[in-house]
Image (cartoon, rainbow, N blue to C red):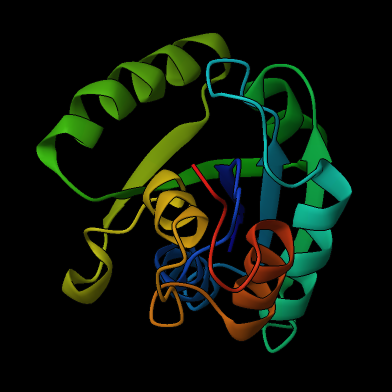
Amino acid sequence: MPTAICPGSFDPVTYGHIDIIERTARHFENVVVAVIRNPQKAQALFGLEERQELLHEVTAHLPNVSIRFFKGLLVDFARDCGAEVIVKGLRAISDFDYELQMAQMNQRLSGVDTFFVSTSPQHSFLSSSLVKEVARFGGDVSSMVPPAVAKRLETRYGPEGANP
């Protein structure tokens, strides 16, 4: 079975991300979770190394998963890893529009295929941005992120959230 890459910014990692990673790990011999710096997103809450640490912790039960981060084109990283497949989770049709364009570009540049996995219904509303917003205002994110992530969010924002 080929190696698959699950890319994302994971700032922070959510149960939705973990669901896609676990499901990918059931179907591929090796899964590389690629932590990327997305220049189109606002300033990251957690640094790359901290995101990598959190991902190591929440995927420790998956022996065929490794965590790496990189700069540059995803297809170059995929080639360096020997990956034949990129796996992307889709929450809504709006995700599909953007991801389809990316998949077609990646395939054209490198021949690497993209597999789309629909998110499980209980996670379809989750995004890292929404989780950060809820945590920032002192909301309960315990059903959205693993305990280690919730603890780090509380450390960043305080138990009552940041004062706007």
